[in-house]
Length: 433
Image (cartoon, rainbow, N blue to C red; front, side, top):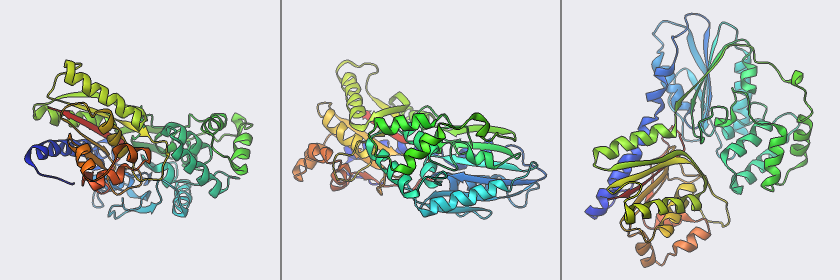
């Protein structure tokens, strides 16, 4: 992670980075997966399936909890994660595929996973390891849907500013594996789904579009989302959604075997871990919530307003304090710049909160990747706007072009962690001393 002198700024930066590290550590799969596993079966097989940015580390956690030499059923399986997010597992194969845009490796992974699930017998235990990012990583078009058409629709949705719940609603309806279809393939086998949640509200059926859980989505709802966001629908997509509306309940395959789901890690857990560290450093934590949604710029303006109220009136808490929040904001792409939603949040906060004295902030994605960039997020200090002006940079211009990445890169204020191999979405901290 980037660090800086002088000493006054270094103290604030170090503390913000420490809060972020605590947030990530609290939801590390190696911490949360093992305790959630049942007793190791003594007969049959343990088949591990998984998808998401945390999938490989979740698989490693299963291997560590159930080592080769320990008695019990054989453990094997297959998970898919984003390129660069793998782990050195020995019994569970790790595939890597494209994110946020699916590629041919995503479809290959889905086909292999469906085949492995289909091999499960009634005496077997199937463990599904599901985390954010799985929607793109486990992508197999439904029958009749052209793969390129599906990618085109999803790419438009990602740029539209639609919330993740609506994007996943469409994805599940256009998929041959999401929305519970992987569970159908498991037949009579016992199925345990372990979830690391990256969605506001932590509904496990929404994470990765719920490959092992019944979908809340319907074809009609998917059509409404696409129409409301003015997404151009190729013929194969439109016809599939229209035909799917006519399916009767009898045409939907029943789920046969025992099913159980556990949510292991959430944004709230990250925020509480950061709050504990804040208290240790004499700061009063104000947790706004782990499920905040909305346009990054609008969410930043609200945060700036809360910081202003604290400075002026000591409400709802008094400084020294830290404002903490999580969830997933969105960015409606208007320009051709670079930068994820966390960097955009910070740049908008710099402008909205320019009148708030001594405002320090950090905004990062807990998976270590802000959008498609190489940074987790960025840091903001009271001097950021002045330093940028000295370099001839206009914060307003960069925000207009959705170019927060280059703004913070020029200031050497990007936070670069590399993949964390977990994912409970965004983490934001505003420090007021």
